[in-house]
Length: 170
Image (cartoon, rainbow, N blue to C red; front, side):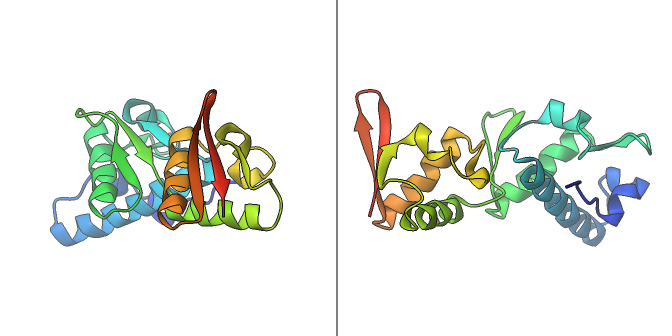
């Protein structure tokens, strides 16, 4: 399935942050939506800003337009401020975690999957990602945050084992 680009993606001014406050707010909302949709579609959880600038999401080669590194940082900072799925990995804001689905949402999906008997109620964390296409590629940090959310809700317990971590579901 191919990614569907919004109309703004083919509008040259979209790739330059606008000075008018109202226009910029709408522009940032569109960029935030696009960035999260693109990351969800491609199952991206970690983004390097320099690399992202060369990726199709921020670089429209057909129009020869790309969003500046500073503007990409503004987009992800906007997502972080709104509590919408992003956090920085360093002070320079060169790498970020992208949470296009909240840990609580992943936790709910994992718990539903386990509750249907699709997987034993206890296993090592690395075993959790196999078996269901939706969880394939789920990075360790997101899996752990998702399980921590379930643990907070009393639906799971993270267990420290000799060879790593495991989880028991209730």
